[in-house]
Structures are given as structure tokens and as C-alpha cells.
Image (cartoon, rainbow, N blue to C red; front, side, top):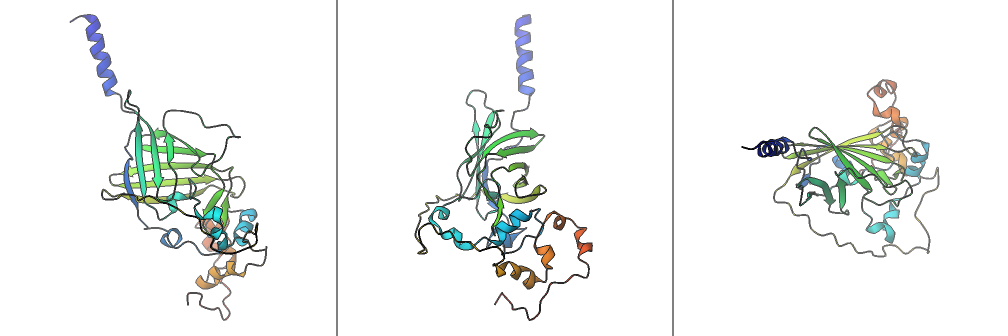
Length: 289
């Protein structure tokens, strides 16, 4: 055998031994499993429930002045969840992979939920757009591998919410995700860093299970006029006028200080601070009736 031929064979063997760029295949149909936070993710969180969220005073004000009637506005009715919150919705998930036909490397994963737009996660090393680039519901996502964990960075996301009871997340936020697959289970851990409304990163995890019989249907959304209101009117509540935000604490016996949220309420040590504290429940009505 000639030296050139031997070198070529060695080169081919070396290339064959190099692992593919994608360490794990996340593609498939994934069904949400509500083993955690079922009440928040399906019917939706209660007004005034800010427990365990590192919000600041500005975000607390956003929640206190928020009105659910806002969702009846035409521009809100077909609005998708943004990149960070869509993981928490009750929607099924489809992940597909985009493969380069020449190198056969996975260059992107595409995530799509029932009520969302296509969200690509690029693996080819492309840079994020400049700061002045337009924001979208999906944002701009790039991924890098850390072993079998896919670390995703998301920027350029439109203003959204960290909880569906008025707590806002600004367009300046940076999102980080860890995608972890164990057989037929997918766990995604999300980190939200928001210099406008959060004082610390907000961390959540969500679980999905592979469902070979799943087929996500189309989502044709039509806008209707649900409520007659003056042109330009936006549903809202004035600061200090929303008594409904106190119902959560009264119903469950949670001290108002805790229900108002903040970074301190995220940690186990906060329990000691509340020892002996009780919610004010004089002749409290049962809001569940």
C-alpha cells in the first residue's frame, strides 16, 4: 500500500471517530407533564400570587395594576407566549432538527408549540444580532454543547411576562436554557435575567415526555370583538385600587409580606422570618365558592 493511500485511510478513520456536533437528538413529539405547578400552568395563577419570584417594586406595580380584561383586546387574542414562558404553557411541543445535507451535521433545532411560532436554535456558531435589532416573540437563540446538555442563549425577545397574572418581563431580558434528555424524558431549565423587573435570575424547570402518537394540530386564530369599549381604551386598574390582589393571601393564609414576592421569598431561610406571622383573616369570605 502506498504511503499516500495509508495516510488517507488514517485520515478517514480519524474523521469517523470524531463525535457529531449534536451530542443528543432532541427531535420528536413531546407532551407536557404537569407534575409541578399544575395550577399555574393550566388554569393560570391567582391574582396577587407573587411568591418566590425576585420582582422589584416596578414589576409589583405592573402586577397590581394589571387587568385580565386586557386579553380581550384584539391585539392580544392571537398573541403567542414568548420564548421563556411558552415552556410553562399547557401546550404540546414538537422539536425537529435541521441537518446540513453536505456535512450531515445538525445545524439547528426547531421548537414549535401549539400556540407559538417556529423557534430555531442555531448550532452553527452564528453571532447574535446587534442590540438595535428588532425583537420577536421567539427571540434569537443559539446553542452550545456541554457534554450531552444543550445550553441555549436567547436574546431579542419582545416584552412578555414571567407569570400570567400581570408580572412583566422586559425586552432587555436575557434568557438561558439547559436542555437535558434522559431517554423519553426532556427537562428544560430556564433562567431569566431582567435588569428592568427582576433583582435576581428567575429559575424554573419544566418536564416533557416523548409521545409517539402525538400530532400537534394547526392553530387558526381569529380575532373577535368580545367587549364594546371606547376606541383607544385599555383595561387597567389604578395603583392602590386593586383589592383582588389580597385575595390570594387571605384564601390560603399567606402573610401579605410573603405573597408580595421578592428575591427573599425564594429561599428556605425565609420560613424562619415568617415564624409566628399569620395572614389577616377576620371574617374572610371563601373565594372558592
